[in-house]
Length: 249
Image (tube, rainbow, N blue to C red; front, side, top):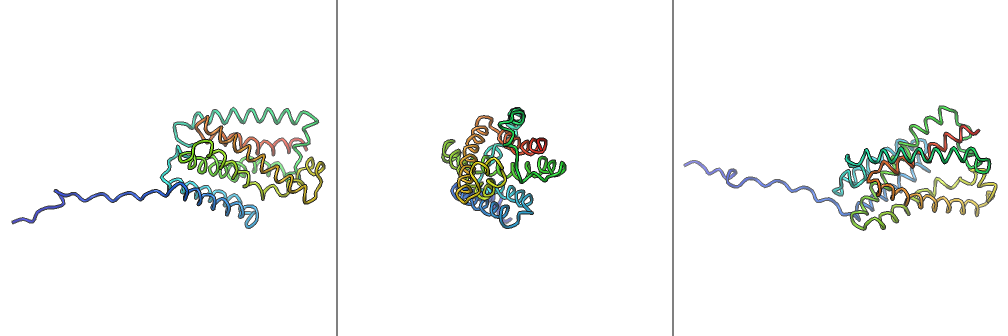
């Protein structure tokens, strides 16, 4: 007698997919990656900040996949990209108009003065506008705070908690970069001086301001359904600041 072919009657069961990690674990790992990235970019390897930021962006994207997320969870679903692009272009135009008005008025023109960019050549400004800001700052921060963190918290806690937590962390993210702001901005240094108290006040103000900006960025992502909308506003506020600061020397 021929042996029975058990494989035809009882097909082998497919191996189950690995269970995604929980949201709390994914958020914890995300925050840990951001802490290390912040220290690396501002203290440890400042000259390699662009490479570190790109690597961190890739790691954060992997965390979304690791937690069972999809492109929609970070605001990059293909069906929302065109709408997000229109939002981004409109926001860039609005920022350009506001900056042009601020540059034209003597009372606000001094806000564009920044010692950190006073010695930059036209080529160095172009490099920051086209490479450093979009890929070293905007891409990382938007993917991290309005993409990964907001997306993870949105599916477990809702939009209010997602906005508050991700924006609060976005504010804290700016503690180290803002420590020299009083010296870099003549307007701030002239008004508050250069004491330790002034540094604390300016840094606390920067944290609060960026946290509030984070809330706006989160709302833009929620309303547009796309991460491209806050990316556009974020790039415009940073990059056009370099452009107008350079033109007003």
